[in-house]
Length: 78
Image (cartoon, rainbow, N blue to C red; front, top):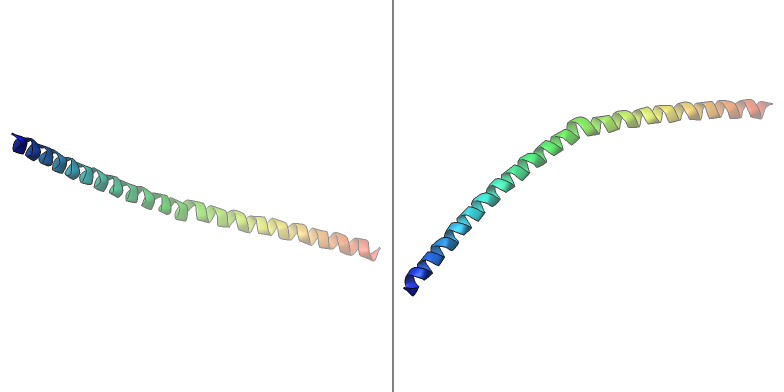
């Protein structure tokens, strides 16, 4: 009788292990797919937006610096 219980327990643990492996495999695959989607989104949407805004900010700063230089030139000459 102990042998049957031991075999049933062993079979149950093996089933549990297989189900756990299968579940973890599915979860890992889903995680990898979602990570790929996130990376693609960052590369396709976020990075270009940051670059566009960064270059725009630099252009605005350059305009402000040019105005400041003009102001300084005008006040220095007076």
